[in-house]
Image (cartoon, rainbow over all chains, first blue to last red; front, side, top):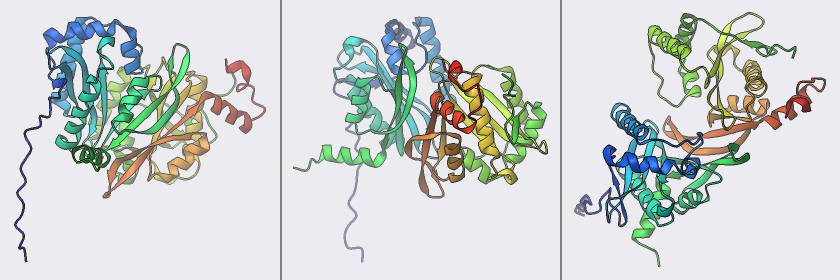
Length: 207
Length: 201
């Protein structure tokens, strides 16, 4: 019955999980990164666009402590995957990205990404890092879905997630208070099938 | 200021010693239906001793970001569950609400809705929050009806977040703003003075 020989499929190791054209996903380098990341937090806009907690400038010492906590958590709980983003050209630190709160039973998790210095934004670093992270989430961790929580006032982040195929799923009305103004918090979601069909289209575009 | 903030029509919010709650949780946790309605984590049957240690640690910890109360019935003083606010975000005036009635004989009789009303009043008139948020699984229709009755509206659904019994279920996110709650209370009790303008500033 089985006349057709089974076609042999090989793992594609050519495409690196961690390296893009412009940037790469890299481990934390506590000694050298802490000073740079601390610098980002001294511009209030960075932390205010990233999350919902009160922004405050942080010292290199505090960032080092944060790094220690992250590595401890990654080791103990195995539900977070944290990367620093570096420019490939000169290995310079430009941001971070992570997959976190992984619920393994359900294949559901959250993502976050930040490009630290204003002059490094809008150059495609975040977009490329996010594409690498998505492939890691869906092809290596085999997750089913990802959620990104975005402040309604962060237009670049909204644009980035929409461009990558995320759909708006929840709008928590007026959940964020910044500058005495109320903004929504948006939950963006991306399912593995949605990501896969976009990938297929990019690899084999239908003309 | 003459209403007892902790008391509703059917229930009251109380405080219990760790051993009382450990005993109750340990009993409720063995009801897998209750546990699967409550949380997406796989239920684990912990020892009473372990649960008691967590409760004690909780009581010693940060008292400013969590407000969780055991719930007792008014008519027979039965301990039937808990309700609470957690992850309070003070700078935004937002918090998550969680509720669980471990005593299933009290399901579907308005005890949960009453407990929800009492915790909302606590959230808006004692903690002075601006809004509160909750998550509920698509398969928990009873809870969703109760939350709507208490004034929550659906703000969206997280598609297929939970995988159970071979299929994917959405998590609904629901929210209520202080203004919406005040409007509702004015309709429910037009004679009440504490929900009028002097309190909304």
